[in-house]
Length: 314
Ligand SMILES: NC(=O)c1ccc[n+]([C@@H]2O[C@H](COP(=O)([O-])OP(=O)(O)OC[C@H]3O[C@@H](n4cnc5c(N)ncnc54)[C@H](OP(=O)(O)O)[C@@H]3O)[C@@H](O)[C@H]2O)c1
Image 1 (cartoon, protein in one colour):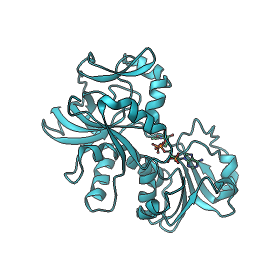
Image 2 (cartoon, rainbow, N blue to C red):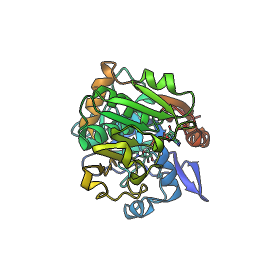
Image 3 (spheres, protein in one colour):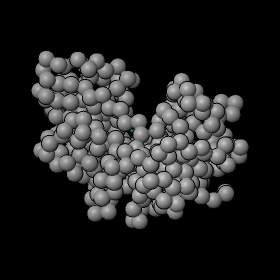
């Protein structure tokens, strides 16, 4: 079975990946499309090696979090032949840059027929993480003001849409040329990070959602209202002190969404089906062109996710 493995420090498409072994509560899925995202670069660089080694999976495909595909061996919730999509566990078990995986049924949802496999693979991580951040962690209320920094990327395109759906006033920060695109997703205002430094803004927001890992609480505290919330996408990297701002009621949010949640994904599917949430695919590459997919991931100007297709031998 084919999959991406690290050989001499390079991600390489190899043929000798072991077939999946199902654990309790898992089904086997043939992966037809899988996204690449910034966490894959960290997985490849060994940032999560300790957790993967513990699971005995260090040399197996260790990249790939999102997928869409077909159930090959069913379980309690999903049957053979079901078309599914989901977000595999970051720290445990298989990753999605391989042809077949074992995955917990609770990390999957049925793929809506309105979406192709490529589109479905571009949806779960960004939509679920944005939903958890804005609704579950912050409890954002209609009329509140949110700043989404890094709005055109794989997470940002959903953060903007879900914030607008929750009734928030959305200020999006992105690179040049993304204005009309982000307004089309529901942003009320779009700032170009090349010409505006958000840290120097004088207005305030109820929520600052940073998807760039560039902002620190101390730099943006003056942008937060009295009970404002800062959501750094990578709290550890942002060096967050969760007690900072406590006196004023401001807080940083400890965002940690390491795997799919079938129930939340099912809710997201409802929004896709009623046309109120748009899936954004930046580009598509055959599995054999994985190096080009990872190159695109590192470039500026992406809109949404980069996705690889695995269905055919290419
Ligand atoms: N905590 C959790 O549980 C969790 C879960 C999932 C993901 N994450 C994290 O979320 C982060 C975002 O992921 P993603 O998939 O959205 O990444 P992405 O697709 O690479 O998007 C990052 C965005 O940041 C923009 N950007 C770059 N420099 C900027 C600047 N100076 N000012 C404003 N925007 C800038 C990029 O725009 P350009 O194209 O112009 O460069 C890009 O649109 C990652 O760090 C990921 O690890 C965390």
